[in-house]
Length: 309
Image (cartoon, rainbow, N blue to C red; front, side, top):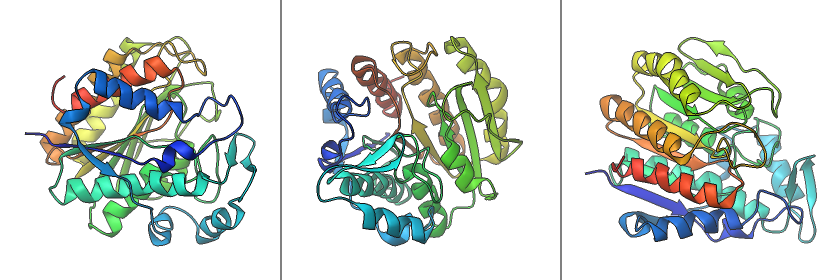
Protein backbone atom coordinates (compact mmCIF):
# COMPACT_ATOMS: atom_id res chain seq x y z
CA UNK A 1 0.00 0.00 0.00
CA UNK A 2 1.24 3.47 -0.88
CA UNK A 3 1.77 5.73 2.14
CA UNK A 4 1.79 9.39 1.21
CA UNK A 5 3.32 12.09 3.39
CA UNK A 6 1.80 15.57 3.33
CA UNK A 7 4.39 18.12 4.38
CA UNK A 8 3.68 21.78 5.07
CA UNK A 9 4.21 24.41 7.77
CA UNK A 10 2.41 27.50 9.06
CA UNK A 11 5.56 29.57 8.38
CA UNK A 12 4.87 29.13 4.67
CA UNK A 13 1.57 31.03 5.13
CA UNK A 14 3.35 34.00 6.69
CA UNK A 15 5.53 34.83 3.69
CA UNK A 16 4.04 37.79 1.81
CA UNK A 17 5.18 39.85 -1.12
CA UNK A 18 3.45 42.92 -2.60
CA UNK A 19 -0.28 43.48 -1.91
CA UNK A 20 -2.35 41.65 -4.50
CA UNK A 21 0.58 39.48 -5.59
CA UNK A 22 -0.57 36.18 -7.14
CA UNK A 23 1.92 34.14 -5.06
CA UNK A 24 -0.18 34.58 -1.95
CA UNK A 25 -0.75 32.65 1.32
CA UNK A 26 -4.27 31.70 0.22
CA UNK A 27 -2.74 29.26 -2.27
CA UNK A 28 -1.93 26.83 0.54
CA UNK A 29 -5.38 27.26 2.06
CA UNK A 30 -6.98 26.40 -1.30
CA UNK A 31 -5.04 23.14 -1.41
CA UNK A 32 -5.74 22.13 2.19
CA UNK A 33 -9.43 22.95 1.90
CA UNK A 34 -9.82 20.94 -1.28
CA UNK A 35 -7.98 17.95 0.15
CA UNK A 36 -10.26 18.06 3.19
CA UNK A 37 -13.37 18.45 1.02
CA UNK A 38 -12.46 15.32 -0.96
CA UNK A 39 -11.64 13.30 2.15
CA UNK A 40 -7.99 13.03 1.14
CA UNK A 41 -6.40 14.93 4.01
CA UNK A 42 -7.31 12.25 6.55
CA UNK A 43 -5.59 9.62 4.42
CA UNK A 44 -2.26 11.44 4.40
CA UNK A 45 0.63 11.24 6.84
CA UNK A 46 0.78 14.89 7.92
CA UNK A 47 4.23 16.23 8.78
CA UNK A 48 5.63 19.63 9.66
CA UNK A 49 8.42 20.86 7.42
CA UNK A 50 11.73 21.37 9.23
CA UNK A 51 14.09 24.26 8.56
CA UNK A 52 16.63 23.38 5.90
CA UNK A 53 20.18 23.68 7.21
CA UNK A 54 22.85 25.85 5.66
CA UNK A 55 24.73 22.74 4.60
CA UNK A 56 21.65 21.37 2.82
CA UNK A 57 21.10 24.67 1.00
CA UNK A 58 24.75 24.79 -0.05
CA UNK A 59 24.37 21.42 -1.77
CA UNK A 60 22.43 23.34 -4.44
CA UNK A 61 23.39 27.00 -3.90
CA UNK A 62 26.60 29.00 -3.60
CA UNK A 63 27.59 29.66 0.01
CA UNK A 64 27.86 33.41 -0.65
CA UNK A 65 24.32 33.46 -2.01
CA UNK A 66 22.92 31.60 0.99
CA UNK A 67 24.77 33.91 3.36
CA UNK A 68 23.47 36.93 1.47
CA UNK A 69 19.84 35.81 1.75
CA UNK A 70 20.22 35.45 5.52
CA UNK A 71 21.89 38.86 5.77
CA UNK A 72 19.24 40.64 3.68
CA UNK A 73 16.23 39.23 5.55
CA UNK A 74 14.37 42.33 6.81
CA UNK A 75 12.84 42.90 10.22
CA UNK A 76 10.25 45.20 8.63
CA UNK A 77 9.04 45.95 5.12
CA UNK A 78 10.15 44.28 1.92
CA UNK A 79 13.54 43.73 0.30
CA UNK A 80 13.74 43.15 -3.45
CA UNK A 81 15.82 40.12 -4.42
CA UNK A 82 14.91 40.45 -8.10
CA UNK A 83 12.15 42.39 -9.90
CA UNK A 84 9.64 39.58 -9.21
CA UNK A 85 10.87 38.31 -5.85
CA UNK A 86 10.65 40.02 -2.46
CA UNK A 87 11.58 39.13 1.08
CA UNK A 88 9.47 40.23 4.01
CA UNK A 89 10.02 39.60 7.73
CA UNK A 90 8.74 36.01 7.46
CA UNK A 91 10.15 35.05 4.06
CA UNK A 92 13.40 33.51 5.27
CA UNK A 93 11.63 31.11 7.61
CA UNK A 94 9.15 30.17 4.88
CA UNK A 95 11.92 29.56 2.34
CA UNK A 96 13.84 27.42 4.82
CA UNK A 97 10.68 25.39 5.53
CA UNK A 98 9.97 24.99 1.80
CA UNK A 99 13.42 23.57 1.11
CA UNK A 100 13.34 21.59 4.36
CA UNK A 101 10.06 19.97 3.33
CA UNK A 102 11.66 18.36 0.29
CA UNK A 103 14.64 17.26 2.38
CA UNK A 104 12.26 15.62 4.86
CA UNK A 105 10.26 14.03 2.05
CA UNK A 106 13.49 12.61 0.62
CA UNK A 107 14.46 11.16 3.99
CA UNK A 108 10.99 9.67 4.48
CA UNK A 109 10.75 7.92 1.12
CA UNK A 110 14.34 6.73 1.10
CA UNK A 111 14.05 5.60 4.70
CA UNK A 112 10.91 3.59 4.02
CA UNK A 113 8.56 5.67 6.21
CA UNK A 114 6.57 6.79 3.16
CA UNK A 115 6.41 5.85 -0.49
CA UNK A 116 5.26 9.16 -1.92
CA UNK A 117 5.01 12.74 -0.65
CA UNK A 118 3.33 16.03 -1.47
CA UNK A 119 5.04 19.20 -0.18
CA UNK A 120 2.51 22.02 0.08
CA UNK A 121 4.94 24.88 0.52
CA UNK A 122 5.80 28.38 -0.58
CA UNK A 123 7.77 30.24 -1.80
CA UNK A 124 8.21 28.04 -4.86
CA UNK A 125 11.70 27.13 -6.02
CA UNK A 126 12.36 26.09 -9.60
CA UNK A 127 13.48 29.49 -10.93
CA UNK A 128 16.09 29.99 -8.20
CA UNK A 129 19.55 29.49 -9.65
CA UNK A 130 22.73 28.60 -7.81
CA UNK A 131 23.40 32.23 -6.91
CA UNK A 132 20.26 34.13 -7.91
CA UNK A 133 16.66 34.47 -6.71
CA UNK A 134 14.15 34.66 -9.56
CA UNK A 135 10.49 34.44 -10.40
CA UNK A 136 9.01 34.33 -6.85
CA UNK A 137 11.69 31.75 -5.83
CA UNK A 138 14.35 32.14 -3.11
CA UNK A 139 15.84 28.65 -2.71
CA UNK A 140 15.41 25.84 -5.23
CA UNK A 141 13.45 23.39 -3.11
CA UNK A 142 13.51 20.42 -5.49
CA UNK A 143 17.21 20.96 -6.27
CA UNK A 144 18.02 20.96 -2.55
CA UNK A 145 16.10 17.69 -2.15
CA UNK A 146 17.79 16.07 -5.15
CA UNK A 147 21.24 17.12 -3.98
CA UNK A 148 20.45 15.77 -0.51
CA UNK A 149 19.41 12.43 -2.03
CA UNK A 150 22.76 12.16 -3.79
CA UNK A 151 25.04 13.47 -1.05
CA UNK A 152 23.42 12.00 2.05
CA UNK A 153 21.75 8.88 0.67
CA UNK A 154 24.26 8.09 -2.07
CA UNK A 155 21.79 7.93 -4.96
CA UNK A 156 23.33 7.79 -8.42
CA UNK A 157 20.24 8.42 -10.58
CA UNK A 158 17.69 11.08 -9.64
CA UNK A 159 14.99 12.23 -12.06
CA UNK A 160 13.45 15.69 -11.77
CA UNK A 161 10.17 16.29 -13.61
CA UNK A 162 8.79 19.80 -14.08
CA UNK A 163 5.31 20.39 -15.54
CA UNK A 164 4.97 24.00 -14.36
CA UNK A 165 3.87 26.37 -17.13
CA UNK A 166 7.18 28.25 -16.74
CA UNK A 167 10.51 26.63 -17.57
CA UNK A 168 12.49 25.56 -14.50
CA UNK A 169 15.58 27.47 -15.53
CA UNK A 170 17.06 27.42 -12.04
CA UNK A 171 16.89 23.65 -11.71
CA UNK A 172 18.39 23.25 -15.18
CA UNK A 173 21.24 25.65 -14.38
CA UNK A 174 22.06 23.92 -11.09
CA UNK A 175 22.22 20.43 -12.63
CA UNK A 176 23.33 21.13 -16.20
CA UNK A 177 26.73 19.52 -15.48
CA UNK A 178 25.47 16.79 -13.13
CA UNK A 179 25.20 13.40 -14.92
CA UNK A 180 23.40 11.82 -11.97
CA UNK A 181 20.32 13.96 -12.72
CA UNK A 182 17.82 13.55 -15.56
CA UNK A 183 15.50 16.55 -15.91
CA UNK A 184 12.34 16.33 -18.04
CA UNK A 185 10.00 19.28 -18.46
CA UNK A 186 7.12 20.82 -20.36
CA UNK A 187 6.33 24.54 -20.32
CA UNK A 188 4.77 27.28 -22.42
CA UNK A 189 7.11 29.03 -24.83
CA UNK A 190 7.51 31.92 -25.28
CA UNK A 191 6.83 32.83 -21.67
CA UNK A 192 8.88 33.82 -18.63
CA UNK A 193 11.82 33.17 -18.21
CA UNK A 194 12.02 33.27 -22.04
CA UNK A 195 14.60 30.50 -22.47
CA UNK A 196 14.12 27.48 -24.72
CA UNK A 197 15.93 25.02 -22.44
CA UNK A 198 18.66 22.50 -23.11
CA UNK A 199 18.19 19.29 -25.08
CA UNK A 200 20.70 16.65 -24.06
CA UNK A 201 19.40 13.08 -24.40
CA UNK A 202 19.67 11.19 -21.13
CA UNK A 203 20.19 14.39 -19.18
CA UNK A 204 17.99 17.38 -20.13
CA UNK A 205 14.71 16.77 -21.97
CA UNK A 206 12.78 20.00 -22.52
CA UNK A 207 9.53 20.07 -24.48
CA UNK A 208 8.29 23.64 -25.05
CA UNK A 209 4.57 23.92 -25.80
CA UNK A 210 2.81 26.60 -27.82
CA UNK A 211 0.22 28.88 -26.21
CA UNK A 212 -3.13 27.15 -26.17
CA UNK A 213 -1.70 23.64 -25.99
CA UNK A 214 -3.65 21.26 -23.77
CA UNK A 215 -3.78 17.72 -22.48
CA UNK A 216 -3.11 16.07 -25.84
CA UNK A 217 0.17 17.99 -26.16
CA UNK A 218 1.15 17.00 -22.64
CA UNK A 219 0.46 13.33 -23.33
CA UNK A 220 2.45 13.45 -26.57
CA UNK A 221 5.41 15.09 -24.81
CA UNK A 222 5.38 12.53 -22.00
CA UNK A 223 4.97 9.50 -24.26
CA UNK A 224 7.32 10.66 -26.98
CA UNK A 225 10.06 12.38 -25.01
CA UNK A 226 9.94 11.78 -21.24
CA UNK A 227 9.12 8.10 -20.96
CA UNK A 228 11.84 6.75 -23.28
CA UNK A 229 14.49 8.71 -21.39
CA UNK A 230 13.10 7.76 -17.99
CA UNK A 231 13.07 4.08 -18.90
CA UNK A 232 16.69 4.24 -20.06
CA UNK A 233 17.76 6.23 -17.00
CA UNK A 234 15.95 3.96 -14.49
CA UNK A 235 15.76 6.59 -11.71
CA UNK A 236 16.16 5.59 -8.08
CA UNK A 237 13.97 8.56 -7.03
CA UNK A 238 11.63 10.92 -8.90
CA UNK A 239 11.09 14.48 -7.70
CA UNK A 240 8.40 16.61 -9.33
CA UNK A 241 8.22 20.38 -9.57
CA UNK A 242 4.43 20.36 -9.43
CA UNK A 243 3.30 23.67 -10.84
CA UNK A 244 -0.41 23.86 -11.65
CA UNK A 245 -0.33 27.15 -13.59
CA UNK A 246 -0.66 25.30 -16.92
CA UNK A 247 -4.35 24.93 -15.98
CA UNK A 248 -6.73 26.57 -18.43
CA UNK A 249 -8.10 28.85 -15.68
CA UNK A 250 -4.73 30.24 -14.60
CA UNK A 251 -4.31 34.00 -15.14
CA UNK A 252 -0.54 34.05 -15.72
CA UNK A 253 -0.27 31.85 -18.82
CA UNK A 254 -2.27 30.30 -21.66
CA UNK A 255 -1.89 26.53 -21.70
CA UNK A 256 -5.17 24.65 -21.29
CA UNK A 257 -4.51 21.69 -19.01
CA UNK A 258 -7.24 20.46 -16.67
CA UNK A 259 -7.00 18.74 -13.30
CA UNK A 260 -7.43 15.40 -15.08
CA UNK A 261 -4.21 16.07 -16.98
CA UNK A 262 -2.33 16.60 -13.72
CA UNK A 263 -3.82 13.40 -12.33
CA UNK A 264 -2.79 11.49 -15.47
CA UNK A 265 0.79 12.77 -15.56
CA UNK A 266 1.30 12.07 -11.84
CA UNK A 267 -0.09 8.54 -12.23
CA UNK A 268 2.14 7.96 -15.25
CA UNK A 269 5.20 9.07 -13.30
CA UNK A 270 4.15 6.87 -10.39
CA UNK A 271 4.14 3.90 -12.77
CA UNK A 272 7.74 4.72 -13.69
CA UNK A 273 8.65 5.08 -10.02
CA UNK A 274 7.10 1.70 -9.23
CA UNK A 275 9.13 0.02 -11.97
CA UNK A 276 12.46 1.59 -11.13
CA UNK A 277 12.44 3.42 -7.79
CA UNK A 278 10.40 1.32 -5.40
CA UNK A 279 7.48 3.70 -5.99
CA UNK A 280 9.40 6.66 -4.52
CA UNK A 281 7.89 9.88 -5.90
CA UNK A 282 7.92 13.35 -4.31
CA UNK A 283 5.89 16.33 -5.54
CA UNK A 284 6.66 19.86 -4.40
CA UNK A 285 4.38 22.80 -5.14
CA UNK A 286 5.58 25.39 -7.64
CA UNK A 287 3.08 27.64 -9.46
CA UNK A 288 -0.71 27.77 -9.69
CA UNK A 289 -2.52 31.05 -9.16
CA UNK A 290 -6.23 30.46 -9.85
CA UNK A 291 -7.19 29.31 -6.38
CA UNK A 292 -10.07 27.02 -7.29
CA UNK A 293 -8.15 25.36 -10.12
CA UNK A 294 -5.08 25.08 -7.90
CA UNK A 295 -7.00 23.25 -5.17
CA UNK A 296 -8.64 20.85 -7.63
CA UNK A 297 -5.38 20.20 -9.47
CA UNK A 298 -3.35 19.55 -6.33
CA UNK A 299 -6.06 17.19 -5.09
CA UNK A 300 -5.93 15.33 -8.42
CA UNK A 301 -2.16 15.00 -8.02
CA UNK A 302 -2.59 13.67 -4.46
CA UNK A 303 -5.21 11.18 -5.60
CA UNK A 304 -2.67 9.78 -8.04
CA UNK A 305 0.00 9.62 -5.33
CA UNK A 306 -2.43 7.63 -3.19
CA UNK A 307 -3.00 5.24 -6.05
CA UNK A 308 -6.60 6.31 -6.75
CA UNK A 309 -6.04 7.40 -10.36
